[in-house]
Length: 272
Image (cartoon, rainbow, N blue to C red; front, side, top):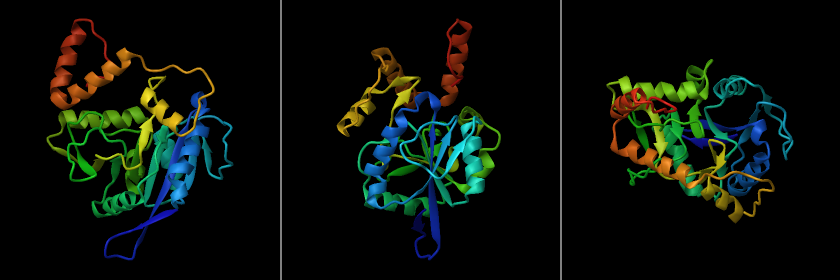
């Protein structure tokens, strides 16, 4: 278990690591673990690692703590937390690759700030660098998809209170609705990094490999020995439009526009 310390206090605070692999993409487990060892664990961070899988898969390392279940991911994470209490958990999907060596000084500073800010949740993949003076910022309630399951840090209490009997979609949708209906400007004790502290690059979006991440894996000497599907230019353009609309248009505005477009026959994956 990795420990941090509160400023001006002797109390130790523990961090565990939870990784989720899917049978559908079991081949990426090798790549993930290679990069985890190379770019994080080799720097002296001896996290206690817990692995979630929906079915039994071949893992390149004989992990002692493997949780096999077809339950939704939040439920699995919550059960691991109940059975293995810690102050904080770093939760990563199997395609959240740590593609570059982590800056130890920056990461230690982040761990200190987690405690100082009493963070209950922190999204570990930045959406933008609006606040350049800090490596993290509190999540705005109306900021779409700033709450995500790809890579995040969460406190024990947050996991126990939030992850009971829900799916990852339910969790993300809850905070989309909160942004739509709440009068509060920010989500209390919920943060997002503005700097890619863990050097995490998401690998697969909607079943297609992200080219930038694929190139990052190749630069680490990893060659994927199977046929894969990449995002096409239209996929990339849609993601670009999504980011732009997220910055320019408030959540309620997008909700109203999509509602009108649905009446004209357009289809969307979500209401927001």
